[in-house]
Image 1 (cartoon, rainbow, N blue to C red):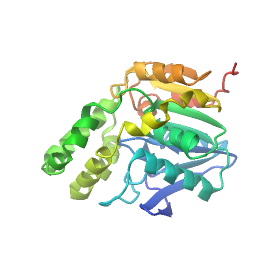
Image 2: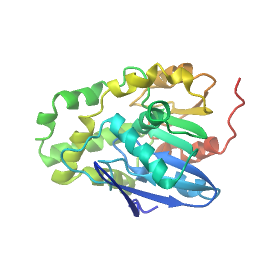
Image 3: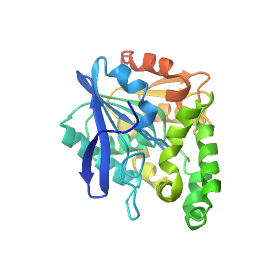
Length: 274
């Protein structure tokens, strides 16, 4: 993966960039914020040895279209994701979702009628009081953050990204994660997406988590600074018969901190459900 998805799907909210590699049963990878499909660059090619792997940049993120007036709420992203599954002709793929990608996948499954073969949630936004901290601060003061000088905005963005990794990034990797948020266009896009992340969009399906019928695996970094381990435990309790796997020494961005261990977990058969 070179970080730039090669294909385009046009939605009412703008163009979504996506890509596919490999052959076999389908796997779809969803990223979270403030990331893009670039975060799967080591995972996707390895999975593609045995699977047809789909990656895409959420609307308003990465190389997908970013412009004023877009609906970037989790509810809207879930509808776009469901439409993408139809566009790709996928009726029951494996779905692996990280951060807010978890909320997007769960909304698609529980509220939009999407069908999955199984679901893996990696440090996922899905339940509990996650809409605090920077999310709330930006949402309540978007007009202030949008006016930050570029140097201050980029320093804030970099520090936020650094918090996601327990081990730290190589300089080129950090630069690639930062690139979509640089400059005036990136600054506007950064606060646009954060300003629309509402906990109400997960509250709408939290009471339905007990009805998740597909095999579900939860993977969590022990050192997650965004969503501490208690969130993983809560999610595990809410989804009956789900698996919970801890990744020691990894933060929120498990794909960066422990890609080999994440791949080992993704390659395992799901535990037999009761």
